[in-house]
Length: 254
Image 1 (cartoon, one colour):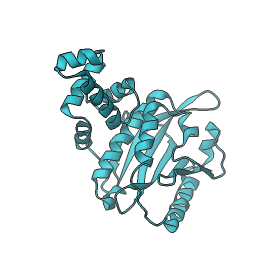
Image 2 (spheres, one colour):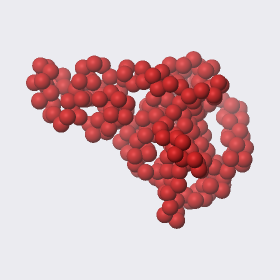
Image 3 (cartoon, rainbow, N blue to C red):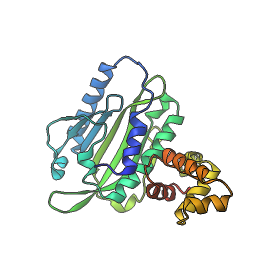
Image 4 (tube, rainbow, N blue to C red):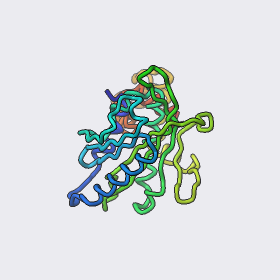
């Protein structure tokens, strides 16, 4: 089952305004063919997700057998690959959530034609069927967007990664010029996720204060504190305060 942070991020992606754009069958089929060909060479695992239809196409090389995936192409009724997520430790999933949240807002601010130039890259781990844990290089791409700006097709890839110590945190990469996007570029969006007052409330929550105590400290009503708390959960795409605090620390909001 997805954790709270992952569940809220799923809603953010699949509940975009997809409008009434005509189904682009040919584009989807071309992307499926490209991903299938890539996996035949890479031998890893790739997941092409149709966010509008909430459907995924999973392509598996020999590596996928280590976590129990069939080498046959799979179609699942979800835009998210739970069979794979279940093999990833909780801390790695949180790191992935924060990176995906940043990537989504970073890409939504980009022009549609520029989005294909960027992808995320991060180190996660897989728990194998034999009990061993191995490092895996995880990448995310937004391949296709609709004319209104909503992201339609996304791609996630998973490849065994030997030189694990060289990658210590998730990054957004510009594949057009080969440069890593500096954190200050997407941290701007981190800072815009919450208002100054909401940041104050989240910081006080992280210190263990109750809503009543926060109301007294900030000289506002308890109802106002409750409203700020709901806004915080919505902005960070989480469903409880503990998760909001965890994500807030990762985003350096707290």
